Image (cartoon, rainbow, N blue to C red; front, side, top):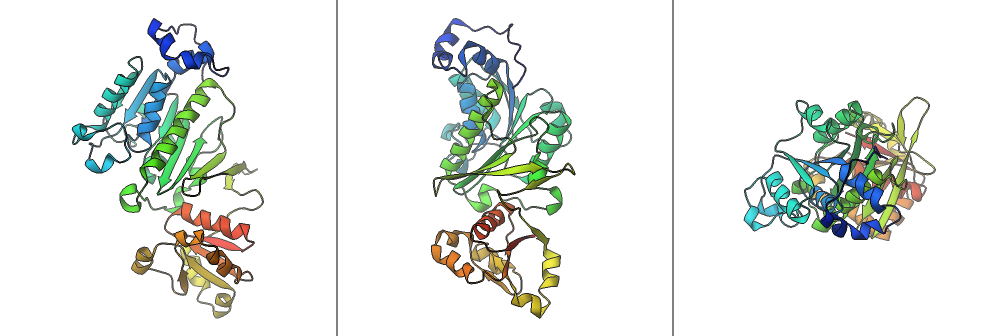
Length: 356
């Protein structure tokens, strides 16, 4: 819960009408709506996730919304970045977003930051807000957000999307897990944006709306939130999973499943292992990248089964034949590897994730 001191917060007459449906909800009522009006949130990234997040945050009455982005609106944005239209092409995203949000809720104060978040400006910007919504699409920005949210004791609401799947988690909340605990920087993860990987616009909308809902719940002090979890939503399968993080005695976090944890091995170590013929007899390298990625470079002795093939039961049956062998999973993105590692674990197939 954020600072509940709301005695100085008042509403205009029209606001009582605007938020009438909120006042009759037990978890909100008048006091809850005051908390929403007092709250200050910063949305970093005015793209596919950021647009619905800020739209619904403004509509529900969050009092102060900061938007940070340096991009201009392009025609390729319009299929998922729902605040913009053809008349906005080549205009500043933050300027267009502010205009649209003010037309939805004129009582919401919109503060724009027309530049990218970096190490020079992050502290200055983030310090003024209560909750930082990470709607970016690259690891560098996420690590910067992680560092300064931790330094300034700010709640970090993280989200990411790929094709039909979205991830979301509340980070740095009540001194719990941080972004780096999920994705340690030393793993040198490769950023994959929607420009290179593709994305269904509905996916970004779905995740952005969930972010807006989590923001409201944090502000209102509703305890049913997703901190210490990574929530995974798959629109293709209409499924939702929660991966729990546990705090260890060494003050590090391990990403664990209910009954087992992910095991990692370096790429160099894997190459060294597979030079041994005896070792090769008891293991296989499973490259889950798409064929065009696999053709560019690949491990010697690797077999290529793209991740989308795991929708077919025959693929899992094939892997079960190697139940006595250990599977080494390779991909250039961490989240793909963990998905297949989960499938292997559920089918009692021992496996390691190869890190780049």
